[in-house]
Length: 191
Image (cartoon, rainbow, N blue to C red; front, side, top):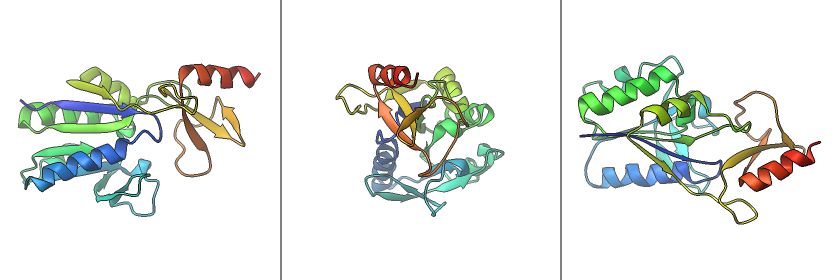
C-alpha cells in the first residue's frame, strides 16, 4: 500500500536536494515520476525547474494555489511516484487530494517542505501533512553553534524579525536555520 510522506527541515536543510536524489533514483529504475512545486515557492527564474542550493537542477511541473492536483497527477500517465517540493505552500485541500491519491491509487506521494515559519507557527500545508501523513521524517540541519537547527530565523539588516508577512521569497530577507537556544537568545536580544 502506498503512503503519504512528509519530510521536513529548516531553511537550507537540503530538502530539495533530497527530493531530487529520490526522484532520480526512481527514474534510473525506469519508473515515471512527476515532480511538482507550488508557483509561490519559486526562488529562481526557471519556473519549470527545481534548483537546490548545492547546484543540482531537476525538471518539475509548477502548480497554482487553486490547482486541482487530481487533474495534474491522474491525467492518464502511469506515475510510479509523486514528489512535491515546498510542500508548506500546499493548501489544506491539496494535501487532502494527495492523501487520497496515495491511498486510492496506490502511488507513493513524497512531500518536502518547512515545518514552521519564522514565527515558529506551522504553515497550512505542513499542518495538514502532519495530520495526514503516514510517515513523517525530519531532515537534520545544523545551527551555526553546532546544535540541531529546529527554527527559521528571518533576519532583516542583521536583526531577527518577529512579525511581517508569513511568505517572502527571494533575497530581500535572509533566513537562518537556528537551534531553539539560539532562537530564544536572538529573540531576547531584540528587546
